[in-house]
Length: 330
Image (cartoon, rainbow, N blue to C red; front, side):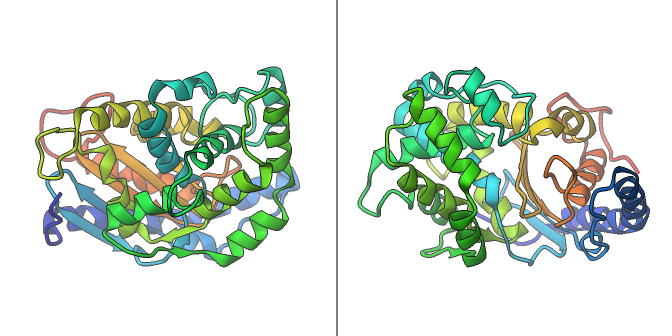
């Protein structure tokens, strides 16, 4: 795909989205602070409700960004989308013999759910599922080593030779990943982990530590909208079919237990990360990235979700069909 210069009409839409998010942020912060006081949980940071960025790359190669779109952040669980693409390309439908395709209904790091399912995770976006996918990637080998599969895919999408990795994330996940290791031991107990736990853990840490800004994340997600096997990037029919399946999992499971509410409000397949980012896809139309560090109880960005809701109301992008024949809402 040829990336064109910034689209001014799209830029105007994103500027309006940023303005609306910033106008709504103070009242949302007050609401969340009050709920935290009632529940006895730590109050959210007011500073985190003051930062929001957004970027869009369209199928036609147009791009636009606004707000704090240049702030870099670790993509964390958004990396599971790229890992799923690599695994599906490598082993195809055999992947689903080891990982399910359904929402879990339990926390994203639940070991109880994994035990009930005899070591088969509900989907590839909860932690247990992502670790089994990483086990598959480690088993693929490769000349660059088992930790490079996701990094290499993102580098290829960005036309970059080297990506930045967040060292703090790598250290924290390596020293504090006991629950993830427990998930892998449970999967291994049921015969669903083939490689050493620490090798799989290291691959998972590397993909979560990939650091991008909104522009980079939106650009990296373009492979999910390139569905024409005759386009200039030479995308094959198999890649388009993989994208369709990945988007289905993103729609059902991409926001963990907040996926239903997100679908209702935004209407797009998406994947969040605790770094504050969300990658959303308007099928056949655009790859969208938002970032804001304030997280809801499910680990999804408060303002990121709100910004995507504003964007889809302006553009009428939705997998559930347009709400009008033409024009944009106010």
